[in-house]
Image (cartoon, rainbow, N blue to C red; front, side):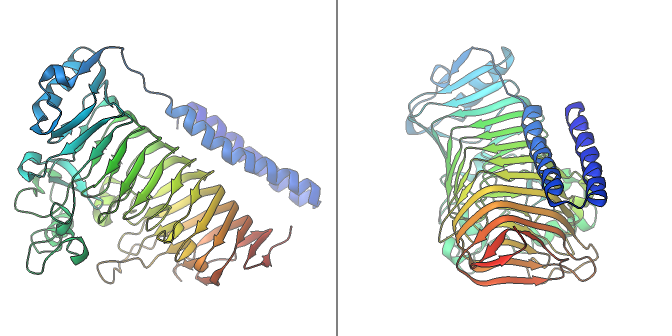
Length: 484
């Protein structure tokens, strides 16, 4: 553990012990209140320490304008080589800014290198070609929490340090009902009966078999002849990454995907993309992640913290941890801040504060989803100062029976504990205030609600296999839970 956090966690532990001794010896409400306050402040000091540990990313002042490397801003000329030449020159010179000036630029995949800041002017738009062959040869990437060799992500970096994508311009993946989306297999996204899609035997079923058989990643070759969509932006095994200010739209699949990466900042980004599996930001096997000042309006989860699927997640065995989400706005989506469903290596130490969530098309505010094939754990989740206008299904949903490919039962019972909501207000709670479905073998534990107000929930509570919830000054549909 890093020194700054080691000291803070040691302090938190000592404080917790002290709080326990005070409660046993004194039993006084005012003493306990002071102890609770100290404990709460120390929890959020951990979030501040994580942000401090992530630090900032800096670059040399050198500027490499893609137009000087042959780029043409007409929206039709393919500029893949111009992007590559500018990035290579910047990297070889020790780093700096690769500038995309005003205009519309068509390109194939963009591969970032160390010490390069890809910067879009406010009036710059990058269009990604619909020619699928441009995303070959296949690269080491992933699909739904499983590592594979597949079409290159639209923006990709592997094993790089000190990289950034910044500016106020737009990345347009040009995915739609005629490009990439039909492969999901849903008619509403353009799929036609009889055409190939991701659930066909040569796609996901083959990948599942490869994972069960222990096939090495380099031999899990997909890409051409297969129908597994590429990610929009993926950093694989990278350190010190900044994604700031830009807008992403029309994504083929997940949008921002730090994979096996650390020290990540996603700041002031807008994701406005309503295609299938268009998650906004999905840290996976990643640690020290700060997502702040962002706007998410998505076709799937706004933020989904992941850690691998089934056997592949257990093989990699890297939990996602030390993640702070703050000052973000979530509109459409399956969930605001979500953990899972690809969660086999576990998630811990997630802090969410000062966010807003509001849309008739937002299904849940906070969501945890897994099953006994995926297993994994979720622990130490803290949510504070969140305003929810409207959700469809639930304010907090914990589901250990999750499945979109039919029943998914196995031998890996998930562990979910220490989930805390504080100072959360909800105007329209949807079908359920709280919807918790734990397992009889291992109930959900350590759920705490403090100063939570949920209005207009059709059913206040639906709870199965969960230890008693700790309510403090909480109301659901104006009914009080816990003491002030």
